[in-house]
Length: 169
Length: 169
Picture 1 (tube, rainbow over the protein chains, first blue to last red):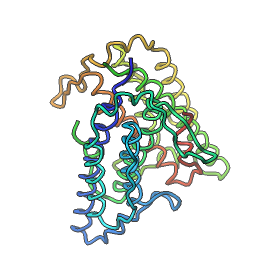
Picture 2 (cartoon, rainbow over the protein chains, first blue to last red):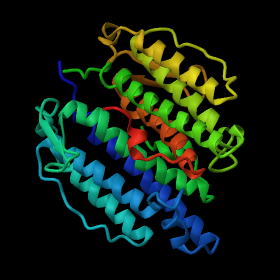
Picture 3 (cartoon, chains in turn purple, orange):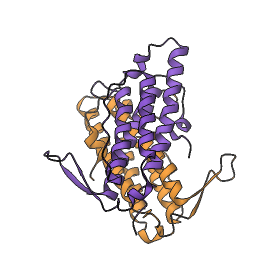
């Protein structure tokens, strides 16, 4: 009995990216209301060698799109990481949502056993069956960047709560 | 076709709690090496109204145990939140791992459709089928606390990386 890989990927990414979009909108409103330079939030980091907020959001989107595409056997979309503003990040999330919503659940029928290769041709190359790839790699990575983006905004005083992180479920 | 709810819960919690245990061990070693008072890390918060590190770890454990128990149709274990030290947190994680490893995968056979009620009898009561409960509530909550615990340690200078967060997969 194989898991419904589609159910455990696309709708989860949709929930969390939808929530992240709302949290980012509140962060932008917070910055505007307090005359905070948007970059003070967008370039904030929890530690100097961690990604800034902009990059956390980009990478969360990349995992949502990349994991979904690989499981569906579709080409992984490549988006340049040129976002500079809250509006740019909203567009990135919207583009990512449109991509994953455009995948047909039927494309995931064989996803549990589909072989997924990450970092191919490098010393860190790793092969997974699709189910293990999603549960033990894709979801942990995706949630890391979503939760860290949220934590960065909280750390910088944006007035949101766990409810905002969770989104609509 | 129902998902293998056991595969999407217990082994994922094991991976991430095992990793969290290692990160906490590195945090303790970091504190010892630099004569940092353990409480400076254990009571650290990203923002005053967020949980401190100790509580993030407790709640991550609570979600791992509670979500697994509910899906298995087992009684949710109740552990007091009395942890004060790194050793206490390691014991909490070990106790949680022992509990979830003690659940039989067969107990999860009907988990996808089992009715789960959270916050019963309160205005925020919510009913889920087991699959939606895991994918749209349990995993997002669990990963939130694991990633935030990690972020708190990174923010406080503990020298760990994404590899440590990811654990063995």
